[in-house]
Image (cartoon, rainbow, N blue to C red):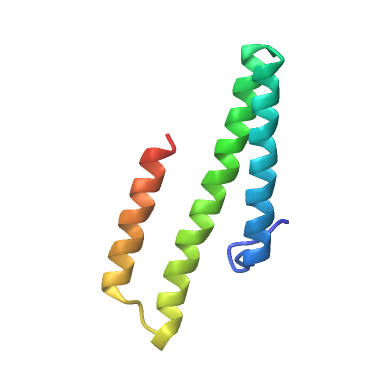
Length: 94
């Protein structure tokens, strides 16, 4: 599902990422039920976090692209809201 900066992911690709993260999270729950090693659980949690971060960043980017495409100019209010959302997202994900 590789995309480039000029090719944003489709909604279906985003849903695939979310389903994959959901499966990884179920795997983490299984690992905890089976008393898996802490390091292994943390690796899987990091993978889930990275997957969700990517979805969030793609959604923020799409919102900004839609605003820019609406009339060919960047909407200042939408840009400010998008940047604020991006900052919250990056602070929460760290």
